[in-house]
Length: 82
Image (cartoon, rainbow, N blue to C red; front, side, top):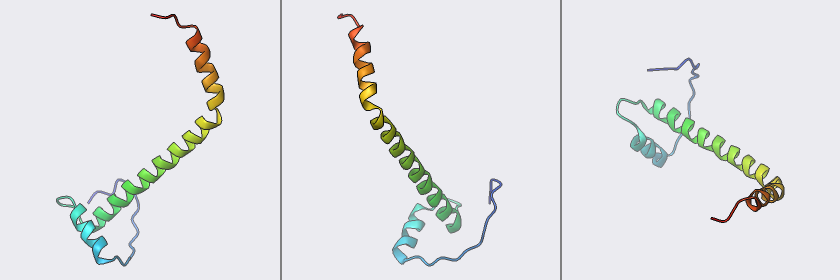
């Protein structure tokens, strides 16, 4: 078992049978149930973090869209027809 320098805390959770079946299907060769659940949670948390970062970027782009569009039109005005 590899811990990558992270402290582990033992906990107990109750999961429905369909969730346990999904965990079993997602388990990789040689991976324990705990390792599978931790990996799946990490992947989901990373996905959520990425989603939130993208949402913040869209808000920022939308806030400056008018200025950016004017700037883009200005650049296009200097291009020659080919």
